[in-house]
Every structure is written in structure tokens, then in C-alpha cells.
Length: 156
Image 1 (tube, rainbow, N blue to C red):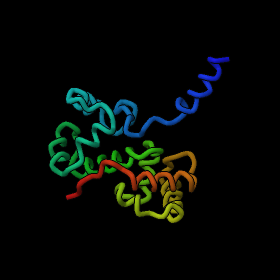
Image 2: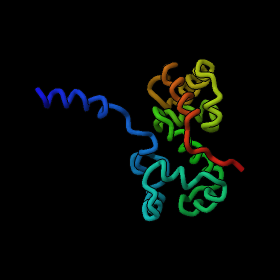
Image 3: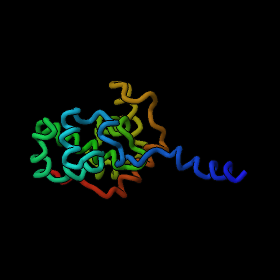
């Protein structure tokens, strides 16, 4: 009985999605395997580490050779990572938000969730990013989380 109670108490914690900032780079298709190896040698193994390494234009410029990306691609990666730090936003959601025109966490924090539903649905239909369109509850959670984000990219 005691172990059943313990299991029931732990179930919600186990079922909760991992913090978006904790995605291992090897689990998400954001950078090449070569770049993952180089990053790991520098101690960068997850999406939060990589976001922290790409906050400023100077940092992004310094990372170009390691990532084997150009400046525009590196900025796009950094913007996706910035969205991934938000609770409830995974790789598909960050791609969907970007495809819907969300340019940053600061931009998302200013958005009206109901007004964002249409662009999200249109982007999802055009690019088939997610199996279903996000519900208003999820979009509201993303907007609220954006207002509490701890890492913000410095734009040029």
C-alpha cells in the first residue's frame, strides 16, 4: 500500500515534460553531430548551455566555426533555443512559433494568445510541423512563460 501511494505521488512528476532547457543536443535535431561533438568537448551538451553560449552577437560570431553555420543560421538557432527555455515549449512548438512569425521571447511575451492561434494553425498547415494545432491553453501558457524568461538574446 505504501509503495502504491509513493508511486501515485511520483507519477505526476514523472509524467511532466522535462524542462525545455534540459534537452540534450543529441536528442534534438538542432545542430550536426560534428557540432554536437565539438560542443560537448567545450562542456555544452544541452539546449540551455548552447543558448547561454549564443546570447550576444559576439558570442554567436565566435561560435560560427564550431557550429558550421553562417551568422543568419546561428541567429535563427539562438532564437529557437531562446523559445525552448520556456516551460511547455518543446522543439516542435518552438519551430511552430517561429514559423508563425514569433521572433523572440520578448515578442512572444507581448502577443495575445487568441490572436496567435490563427498564425500558428496556418504555419502548421503549411509546414506540417506538429500533428495537431496548439490549444489556447498551451498558447496562453507559452505567452505567460515568455514574460518570465530568464535568458534574452541581445540583438545587433
